[in-house]
Amino acid sequence: MYPQRLVADVPKVMRPDDIIALDNGVYKIWFACNYPASSPNTALLDNALASMSAGLPSAMAAKMVRPDKKVVAICGDGGFMMNSQEVETAVRLNLDLVVLILNDSAYGMIKWKQANMEFEDFGLDFKNPDFVKYADSYGAFGHRISAADELAPYYCMIV
Image (tube, rainbow, N blue to C red; front, side, top):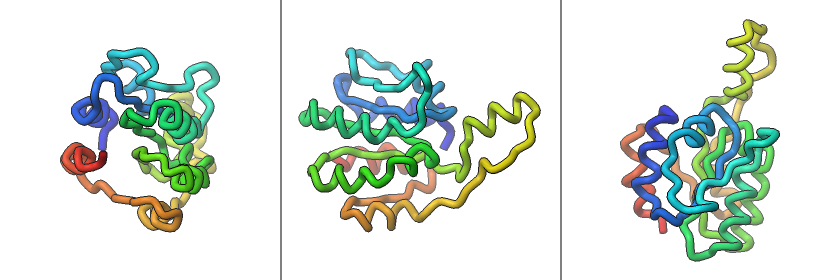
């Protein structure tokens, strides 16, 4: 799924005061420039030092502070895996949130930047777990989207 499509689809299933929490990756640039956040504190992103792995913890904190809002963490696979154990905390605290993981099996933004600077690609690709089984192992519900058209209809079923 292209980030542009995700930026177009996510607002279709969110109310204006619902919250997205972004991790860092190339897709974050698309969201930062194009997501129609209409209320303060509805698009959370770490833009200062661009630290990886802020998406899931930010979404969890947002849900604790605003339990009445739909909250979605949008994470790259590399950033998600840096704090993925927090899925256990989210389940234990009964936090009703959605985590979208954009899986390219690489540190994609670093790879993109290094390619643009003509650096050698070294150590940026990795193997991920099966994220559906991973979610299930913590007692969360995991689902794999295999086509862009599946996201919005599936997400609308999640409350």
